[in-house]
Image (cartoon, rainbow, N blue to C red; front, side, top):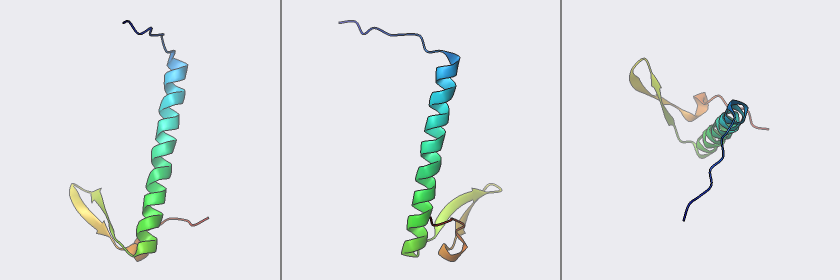
Amino acid sequence: MSIARREISAQELVAEAKAVELAVEESVIEALKMHKRMGQRVATWQDGQVVWIEPEDISVDFD
């Protein structure tokens, strides 16, 4: 069985990439909110090292 494939334009690829980027950004914000609410710190990468951010230092706006 052969699956038909269609060509995707550059414009469609850019739109899809932007949608994925937005979804990832929203997911990170929700995860940060959850960690802050639960009083859990989060790890990030800074200057080649893992850095822990305490819940009170997590910068995220609650709507």
